[in-house]
Length: 188
Image (cartoon, rainbow, N blue to C red; front, side, top):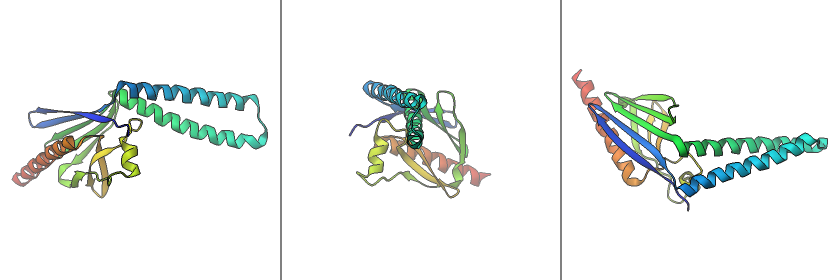
C-alpha cells in the first residue's frame, strides 16, 4: 500500500498551545499526482473538443455525463495536489477553547469548540484493513482523520494521516487543556 503521513509540530506560548499538522508526502508522489492531473486535463480537453466538433444527438447525453464526472475528479485531484503542497491543519488550545483551521496557505476558516462541550475524544477507529482506512491512507486523498470527538451532537474529525504515536501525544495535549478548562470553570 502506498501511504502518506503527516508532520506534527507543537509550540507552547504562555497559556496557549499551537499545534500544526502538515502533510508529509514524498516528492515522487507529488510528481505522480501532478502528472495525473495533466493527463486528466488532456483527456478531458480531447473529449470536449470532439463534443464541440459536433456529435449525434443520441451521444450528447453521454458526453455531458462524462464531462460531469471528469470535472468532479479534476476538482478533487487538484484540491489534493494543492493540499499536499501548501495545506496544513492548525489547532490552538487556549483557555476554554479548541480552535481548528484547515488552511490552504493562509486561507481557511477557524472553527472554535468549547472544551467543556467536547465529548468522546479519541482515536478514530477504522477497523484494520477496511476499504475506508486503505483509501484514507493513500497519498492522493486529503482525508484520513485519525482523531475525533463529538461536539453538541456532531462528530468532528481532525489530524489527517497521523501516526499512532502522534495521535497519542495530541490526545494528551487536548485532554490536559480540557482539564485546565474545567478547573478554571470551577474556580470562576
